[in-house]
Amino acid sequence: MPEPTTPLPTLSVVEHPLVQHKISCLREKRTPQKLFREMALEIAMLMTYDATRDLAREEVAVETPLETARGWRVREDDIVVVPILRAGLAMAEGVGRILTGARTGHVGFQRDEETLEPFMYYAKLPPDPERLAFLLVDPMLATGGSACAATAWLKKQGARDIRFMCLVTAPEGASRMADEHPDVPIYTAALDERLDESGYIRPGLGDAGDRIFGTLTAFVD
Image 1 (cartoon, one colour):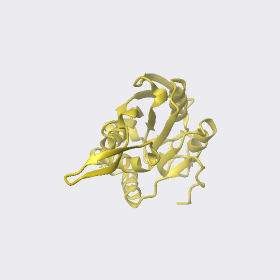
Image 2: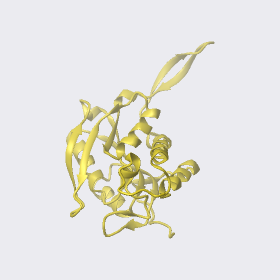
Image 3: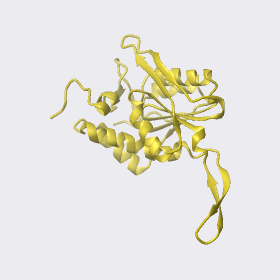
């Protein structure tokens, strides 16, 4: 497979060996639904370390069994994980296992299969978004339509600190996000070659939502 296009300044490819191992398992068409979901969750857990590297922290005093020590604390309740429904739910669960005190919002978009553009059908956030940090998660960044629309909606609600995290990215989607939201960093496990004429990422991993939730029209023996 040819090397993908050089990543944009806003794009970070998480190249940890465990992440790359698990993304290869996701690509395999014979990976069963239960394992696929578990792998997506685990990759999200691992990627959370990169995506939150620059989170604000505050110094605290910690009482060890022997004495008082200097420590650090992240205000997890100031972090909101926002899955793009429905496929982002598995990733949100993985992030939540690392950031156990984080809150969860939801945005729902459906893609028009003719225009490939998204339309929103559901949205819910915690109050006071202007003071919160948002992790927007969706397994696939294909055309970039849903990611850009969700990001624009978050900003319209007052969000100022947004990071986008996905499993597989097409160059077209990454470029669109960089053009429309150059202030939003993108974290991905893989930068693939291209979109096909139907708007699917190639080589990709198929429809992530169908594979996570077992709603494929046909299964591989």
